[in-house]
Length: 468
Image 1 (cartoon, helix red, strand yellow):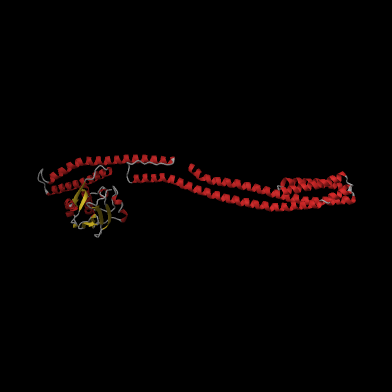
Image 2 (cartoon, helix red, strand yellow):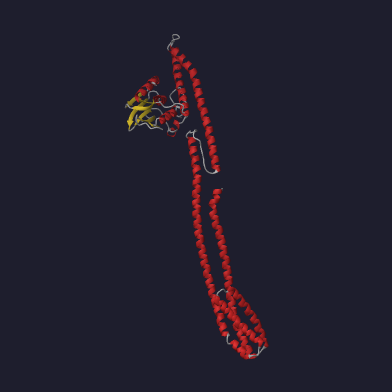
């Protein structure tokens, strides 16, 4: 609110100042016009009154009529009022001198008539000065006309000066307003950026760095609420990871007994089995192994999310990991009669061997799972500049375009039907992405030349690893 008032204050000042200035100019103009009109009227009346008074005096000089004297008395009073009015309105020294001369001449005529109305000689002498009074009155009348023109010019000049002042003030205050807007925009933009960064960190799963917002109190309050949300989400994340780790570990205990028992049966250490019993024991062994992989995925995901396990970097060859994984997948590959095409260009990697093995195992297991019976899988490893590339392609149904980003999200189940008996947890590809990113690499999915999915993993090779 204070910011808006500060921004609006210059404009309010301009408007108030413009109103005051225009009001003063209007009042001054009205007074000037009224004064000019009054001066013009009074100066015109003065000329007429002097001429009339001179005419009456000459008539009295001839006719000796007392009524003319009474009329002259009234005319003298009117002329005195006009002189007083003009003396009040006219400010020039020359005009005041002319008015004083007219007053002296008129008063002299009035005194001469009242003192000895029948003294013709004195009256004549007084009348001889009236042409001078006439010239003086007409000069005042002309100067009053000039005064009107001058006042109008002054008023136009004052109006133009005031307009220029208002334009300057408006420009100055508009510039001040723009500067204020820029300053307050920056003051507001800074906490907004802090809020945006805090929200982005929450979206990225960063619950450790506090969210601090500096600025207006309402935005600081919002920042405190975001920080409270960060703490709450961090607590929820910790509880989730604890729950996953606890459940996964609790599942491993009975699973170990199941696997041990199924292996004892399968190896016929507890007695010879018939054909049907051997088939059942194989099913138990197979599904216990599958269940163990699912639990390991849960444990791996929980450890990754909680950042409990640290990377153990060492130099190793990718071909050895591929051989190990293919050996583990050999029973499933034989059962589905899959054709495995391997194209390897050997290169060494620097990273956590166990996690890279999990990446390779999850990708190949995924390909075996979705490839139909009699289908094919292509494994390629080659160099591409400073990167080591691993491609796993299959002839399965592939990954729809709209799901190619979603499949790397935790617990996301692809809509493509699998060819296996056991459904996954939706964590395998999420773990692949996390482990690849931990090694400074990238993973992407596309369409393979076999018609199915193509998973492409790019690893920095030894000496080229990027720390992320």
